Image (tube, rainbow, N blue to C red; front, side):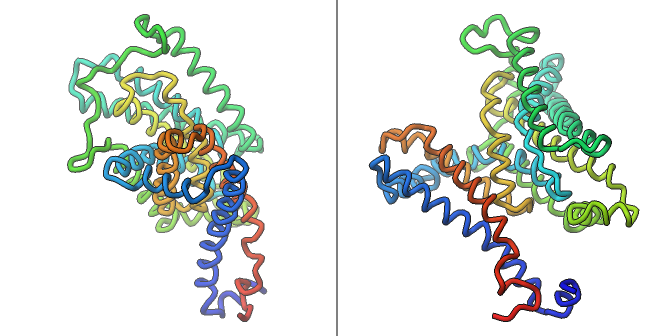
Length: 359
């Protein structure tokens, strides 16, 4: 009945779009209110906090460069959640895909360090993406073949992946010269990625933006994407219609994991020059928040990643000026995530957004 009403209601698409924007907006406002109360308990001014966040994230060209550079890996790790999310899957193991992707990229680069940098970068990109696709693909296979909960599976595999990463970096692949911070051998300065012309950020930013655009086209402009969205709406109905649900799940998890693995490879090639604990910087976990803020829309991931990248960029300024610990930003991110989850209960609840409702 609702479907019939929606089909005859010319304002229904507009109402649904407005509701999709309203729910995250209400969540952000709620998180801001709760965080302001938290700051008042710390005897800190919410207005001063907001001013310093703006200055630290966007107030100067240096701040803006810092923000977008922090946002670069987040674009790809958010896709690791958003693409499977189109099928109704909640994958939260992107952190392991990042570190294992970075490790695989380093291993692939080491035998090629005396060849052309282009060859090294291509090998790193392929190896990192393949490792990420394989690792997240395990969760998809467990879901598709054995009906194992993908959230639990990806979480457990994240711990396993991080343990494997530490095992190799601190053991078999460790550079003996890395005393204070266990690391693999370096890929060499000649094989490091340069910066984007006219803007002092590494190529991870344009790669992430292109990946978001391509994933949006895949999801909303192809038959495969339509099949994914149908499966996400009702997996039983998709099976009855003869859609290849198993293949779609494996494909979505592989694409998402490949994006996260590519993020790890780019971080090694652009910033670290080797695989070490710096890869385990929470990119995968922040990507979960960004994907939920964007409601799994690949294009909406771009501004959300810049927003969260700005919060991270402002952390140092907040510590110096307000004496707040670095964990304060993590508290804010946690409140945003909880508010986003709570806002989902509002999605579709307002009477004026119901099909056929009158205002």
